[in-house]
Length: 253
Image (cartoon, rainbow, N blue to C red; front, side, top):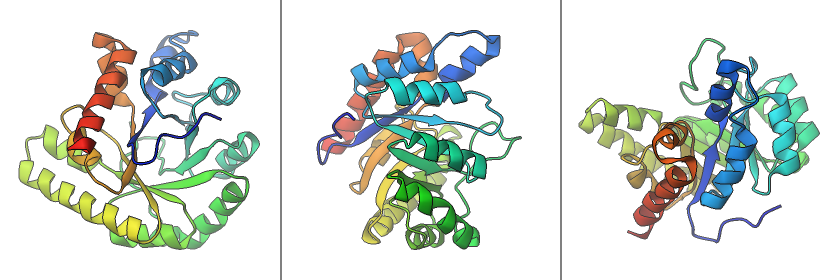
């Protein structure tokens, strides 16, 4: 496995789901998400994220197999908390497993996982994954109840959902945006105080990544849809390199 990012450097996980979305729109073999993953590595990514959905709307089982066979970067395998996905994760044993909420009718992940109400089930669900050597992450809203529950069930990582912050920015609701950013700052610090590693992601762009990258407790950002869209205009390598520059500048400041 590739070496991890240097200590203190904010890691960038590139989500390649929507390369597969474009491929599947025509039922062809291209564009190839595994090729995108390899390009991401040379452009400065520290890991690759791929979400295998129940309906296989983008990433396929074969994509996961190839990523495990060919990838030199760590794979972050996003999945719902179902028996099918648990079995797939235990077969492949990726570096990390991120448990996310999933509804068939949603266009994208719409919020954080409800951990507090399903604490017992999720504790039993993630235990075999952790025993298999996977780093278990829980994708949650910036909410103290969910963070405490994630710590209690034995998760190693929480990934804070940045979608509301990004949506408020896009809508020009800057007071709400700033309040959500303050919540992210507070909850990142709270999660860190409980011994959880803190990641963040969802909806981040060049315009919104800086304040999140500046959160000192956040160790990794996972970004996908924006980068794949930007790649249409600048190429994937340049889109990722530019995001890396934004992240590094914000962290240095």
